[in-house]
Amino acid sequence: MKIILWISFFIVFYTFAGYGILLYFLIKIKRALKGRPAIPAVDNNLLPGCTLVVAAFNEELFITDKIANCLALNYPDGKLKLLFITDGSSDKTPEIISGYPQIQLLHQPERAGKIAAVHRAMEYIDTEIAVFTDANTFLNPDALIKICRHYADKTVGCVAGEKRVQMNENADASAAGEGFYWKYESALKKWDSELYTVVGAAGELFSVRRSLYQDVPADTVLDDFMISMLIASQGYRIVYEPEAYAIETASENVLEELKRKIRIAAGGIQSILRLLNLFNPIKYPVLSFQYISHRVLRWTVTPFLLILVFILNGILAIKGGELFYTLFFAAQIFFYMLAFLGFIMEKRQIRIKALFVPYYFCVMNYAVLMGIIRYFTKKQSAIWEKAQRKQ
Image: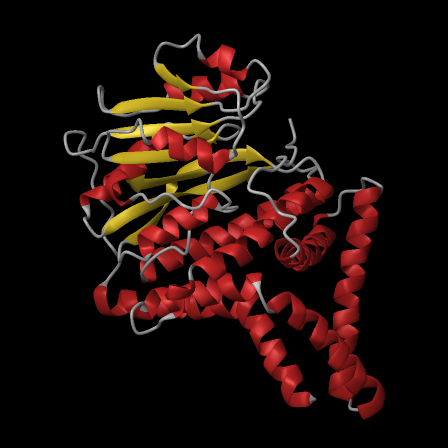
């Protein structure tokens, strides 16, 4: 029982903290041997042609601001195209976009899901690079320049930007927890990228070489992750560019964030089953290690092991009588009590950020469990109702 407990606890620790610690030291060793990686120079004459693709579904509240943001982006004259696709939108989103001649609009009344819309949009792209961003996120002015400068390196097939969650001092659990999570994720992605490659891109802002793009199945839930990882499976790197970032508000509340996380977890299991070739360490020695450490463990066994560690520790503390296991069990109870207090504070709209992090941690792992159940019970569709964001 003790052996199982410690193996389980090691996997849990490695998933959420150990991999980050290991990455940190691997990067230190790599820098000592090879020095820091050079930052690509920006030469407007060498920047490739680029199409910015925005898939928007019923975004009339955000779309005018999004268009203004896109038109304000810096990029060499004649090298940037804007393509918006609004399939299935039943509000004024297509009508608003059609008022801007600088934007190519694709619209059809049928809604087949975001990935079907993206596939349709790709048929109209003739530039070397396609950049994808969400309709409710806003990019920094030099985002496209910072992204596309990396494509001078022919080993780069995809560049991922940074997601930033907007929050203030009165942030609730969804904002505080999501913000903390993405700060940690950003650090891991920087180190992943420097070691070899980022493990998947987020749809808020990422780009691909048009020639490497592959259509993914129409029922794909995490299309951004699958598109980027299919490029990685071809032997190309996914680079992380923190100086290109997309800002969005947090989910409206924890229930909305939970809805989003469950969908991501269901898509994570789907992706793992469709990317089994990446488990081959002979063909993908570094990518396989990064993929399993950063993604697979989180999306599969770790949430179950959290439960197992708690149960086994409880049995050992009650029956074994050893002080160490009693203290270890007390520490777990204390952590989950903090999470429960975070839940109570959220309900009463009392803002104590220190309690929101353990609460968000528990919500995130609960979402993985529910996502696995949803995927295997065939209840997760690629067409989904998006989580509501704070205005």
